[in-house]
Image (tube, rainbow, N blue to C red; front, side):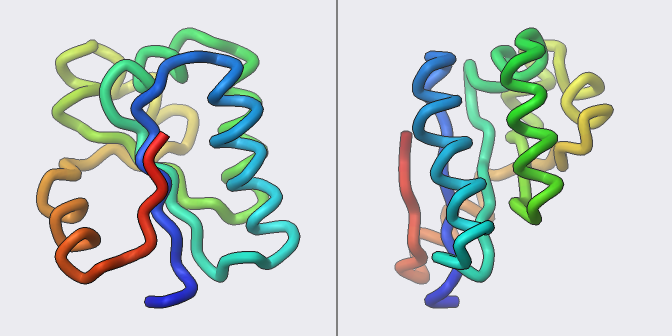
Length: 112
């Protein structure tokens, strides 16, 4: 889909999380820059979301405005945070194949 954006979020810096990933995703939905926006939590960002109340609030805001938020299950399982992410409303699934599909289909992918 030309009007769908995936944000692959691997940078666990809280300022980057708030001032880039969440800001862009939330504003992208509110301003209708993209029809669909999916944030993919990958690696250390799973732990950041599970442990930071401030980032959890941003995730809740993103979900509220219609951003899809999903986490790599392999990463979150290894970090022991899958249940905490799911409790926030984050979809937890294996992302290896879906990410490969996005790439092979030349989907819009922003990596942070």
